[in-house]
Length: 105
Image (cartoon, rainbow, N blue to C red; front, side, top):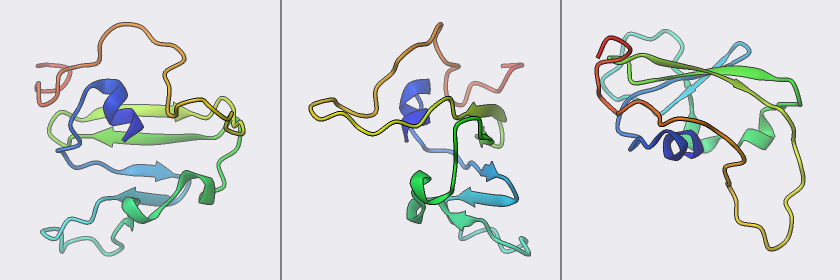
């Protein structure tokens, strides 16, 4: 949801996260073709996956637009009392519009 908010998207499209040899997504009741369905992203917490500083994983949002993200864990810190999380600590330019047709759109 943090990535969705940062990009200005509504979480209304399908997506997978691939972390090592594991794949996470929302269950798709119409997807009977997969031999090994993805793990349910709604039941997984990042702190339980074993990510460390320097870990990378991929996130593809919207199989039609195919927005591919490489996510790099730059650091892991204990929360500070009184701070609101998540928070944006940097960035530039606006994200692409949702359902815009991908790079070609």
